[in-house]
Image (cartoon, rainbow, N blue to C red):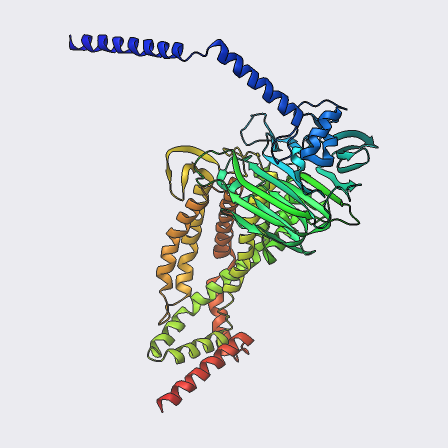
Amino acid sequence: MEDRKLDLNSVIGIVLIIGIFIWMTYQNKPSEAQLATEKAKKEMLAKEAKAQGVAGKTGTTPATLIPGDSTQLAQLQKTLGNFAYSATLPSAKNDVTTLENDFILLKIANKGGYIVEATLKKFEKFKKNSGQLVSLIKDNNADLNIQLQTSDNRVLNTKDLYFEPTLSKVGEEQVLSMKLKAGANEYLEYKYILKPNDYMVGFDVQSQGLNKVLNTAKPLDLQWNMKTYRSEKSIAYENRYTEIRYKYEESKNSYVSDGKDKEETPDKVDYIAFKQHFFSSILLTNTPFEKSVLKSNKLVLDETKDTIFIKDLKATVPLAFRNGEVDYKMNWYFGPTDYTTLKKYDKDIEKIVPLGWGIFGWINKFIFIPLFGFLSTTMGMSLGIAIIIFTIIIKIGMSPITYKSFLSQAKMKVLRPDIAEIGEKFKKDPMKKQQETMKLYSKAGVNPMAGCIPALIQIPFMYASFQFFPSAFELRQQGFLWADDLSSFDSVYKLPFHIPLYGDHISLFPILAAIAIFFYMKMTSGDQQMAAPQQEGMPDMAKMMKMMIYISPIMMLIFFNSYGAGLSLYNFISNLITIGIMFVIKNHIVDSDKIHAQIQENKLKEPKKPGKFQQRLQEAMEQAEAQKKTKKK
């Protein structure tokens, strides 16, 4: 009964509220006089807007203009000055002109004269079978503006003014001239030139007859802004590799640091690249920009959340006047961040691909890229198979180094009893113990550094692979086994929660790579511990090696979980091959008995002259021993 009363009260309350709402609506209904007044106000405002043509200081032109209307021209001149002429032309409307070839589609707007859409026709976004092409520019995520300082002290922005388009064809080239006119023969022109089958677009900026219209005392500021779209599966990966790269002072290359509101101001800039993980928008110039202001702002603060934009990138460059006019020959590049594609242009833009510095970059440029390119294109095999064969070739090439390292370990293992004896004999005199140990190495013909040097040689190749695979454009959206995209993580299970450092998914290739490295370290650690006796005052290497057997796989499992599957596959195959090579060397090539016999034979011979390093080390120890004795006296 109580429930029924409650329901009845609720109904009564709702009816009352509706009734009050209807009554208030009726009371607030405007009278016919009020409606007439409002209509008159709107008509008056519309007439004023039409007469003025422009609102505010931004130089924004009206959407509908009457060509040849002298009254309207006079009104527009109050805000636009000489550039009011462009606002009265038939082209003063929100139309676009399309340029396209087999590679790219560009749309250039009358308003602003800049590219409002740049779509790559051969590449789709990360969602498989989505059918959505990669658009670097679309839906107002980018703009281009030149700030005009007029001779009558106005500040106008080209992005708010209307250009007159003229499309023509010169041979196979499409040429689009966009002119912002201050008179019949006075204009600022953007010229776009598109060739067949090319990602590079000619872009000339020049003026004619504007030396009296513009203030030429200081350069014009060209402003290029872009909020970069997310185009790849991994937000973390794309966030990491999206940045501003640039070339300056003829041969130097650098980038704007990652983070919130980062800025660089380089001089004599040849190109500015808004580089994303696998695609880039690049502005190149034949006449270096004397001073540029480059800004990068990180938009992704939480990589676990979905996002549309990755970073907000801005560039402001000066366009200097020469003889009262501006004349710059430039280019736009809208295309893949692919080393081979970029290098064909011979403009150094391939350096925006992060291949590593020094020897790491050389390994990538002269070994990894040519070899992998040959396997993936010339041989026509799947990318997963290409990675496996690539890894096999690299590991076979490194096998002599692996052999040298293992041979050194085997020799040290044979000498272990002698080293232990020396350690026991001179346990109270560490310096003497080191000297006698060095003499034993020399007499036996063993170089203790021989095992370290081969390992050090392999480190650059390992680091180079960490740079190569994330930058390998060929891997993008290429599947292998359960991985649908070798350039991104190979998720086999989506977790219902997020684990710090690890992520919200489970990737299988990192698990396989972690298992392989565990068995590899398990296989080699025993020999290393036996080969290297504990030195007094030094860390216990045996304990450290035991810890690393478990730490290394866990680290690989954690950090590789969100890395590209191609890199994890490479590491998995690499460790498997290394295990196989070590097994063959240990059981079929290196004979411990022969090594022992050879060392015993060497002991009977005259000691070999120590190498320079050993000699210097021995001299240093002798000097230290002499100083120690002097202090005791």
